[in-house]
Image 1 (tube, rainbow, N blue to C red):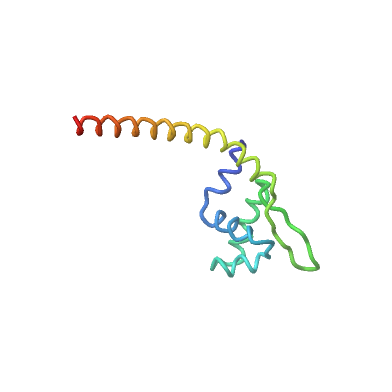
Image 2: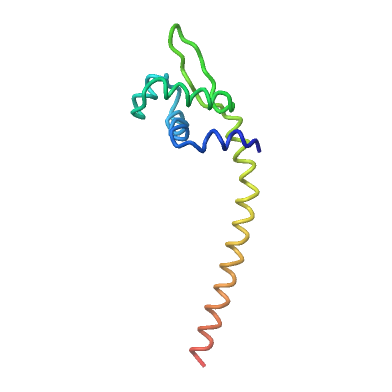
Length: 111
């Protein structure tokens, strides 16, 4: 997994931009307005997201529409999947252990 992705998403405004773009493409002005940012700030954040490969831009006359690229998020999901499996296994083991404890406590109180 490329650390550039995590670095780009570590900034709260960039993460909020990604969350906004989940609903569909937006212009810099629309993003700035929705996040209460000045347009140059929004452009700076979008440039970082673009350089990290998380968004792409489509020109439409004098407007530029930004949208999410699916591939980096799929790669991140695949990378995280190993950790999900690890934690699911640990939680399953914990559940089994707790059930054994509960059964032991029930046996101790009935005797």
